[in-house]
Length: 229
Image (cartoon, rainbow, N blue to C red; front, side, top):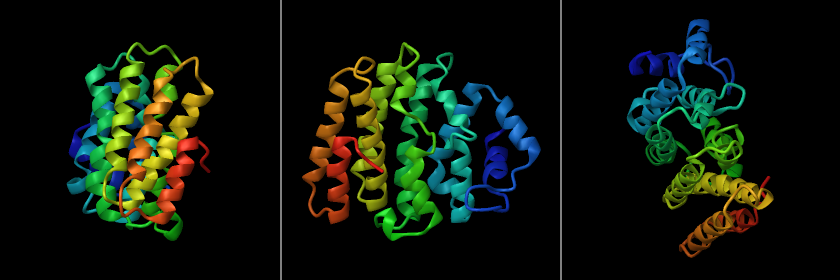
């Protein structure tokens, strides 16, 4: 499938509800027939160009399309765990979340904590790391030879998003970091001891920023412990 067709099939549909669009059966069948490499290439391009290429779609359309790509019920992003895919493309897919947040979410989402907003896109931004999206555990559980490098790429990705000057993006990054700290803490045999420490140090540096939204400051302190709802 060519990129332009992919974008139209993925986003240019009528909403059924706040999580789903009326995707065609042909598109969904083709989506699941794609190779892992083709899937990741299209996802990376979508996120890298999200600021411009998703501008013509409504918040609900954009939210539903992103949900299809990242939600565990569909989870084409799971291809990032395929060790047969070139490492460079797997890294690129992880890194593509930075422009998704910088160029899309920070421009379209409310600049406030998600608990102060009922906008579909705000909720999608915050809950992305609960939706079945990438997890450091997925890179380490099956003895991925590039697992440590990809976990390092994830930590760098979270850091880039965390220091964006946008409250919703900051809280989403803290959400992902909190879960990742918890994963590392509960699976010490699988993860280098330094991982949780690196992420905690990242949050400590973030907490030195001034001014900082009081609710974000409290959430960051909670994220350091790995205990997030």
